[in-house]
Amino acid sequence: MMKSRREEFFQRGCRDRDAGLLPKSTDAAYWDGYRSGRPIGLDEVIRYFPTLEAFLAWRGQGVEG
Image (cartoon, rainbow, N blue to C red):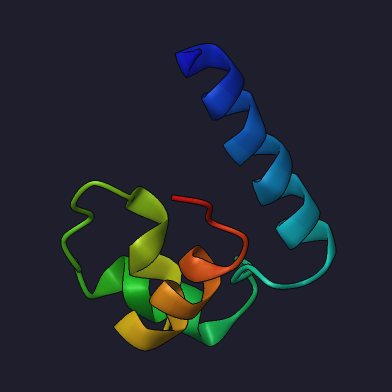
């Protein structure tokens, strides 16, 4: 079960990356987040979003509880 959930998140990440929804390493916000030493917490990708709200908006898309 855990493996299928991980695969589901991986596929979602690939789709979002290809659709341009995730920060890219060429974006200033990506590097600002990397250099700022933002805590990564449970989800490492959060530090690459310009704001917490932007991360939560992305994370909330398609999440089924």
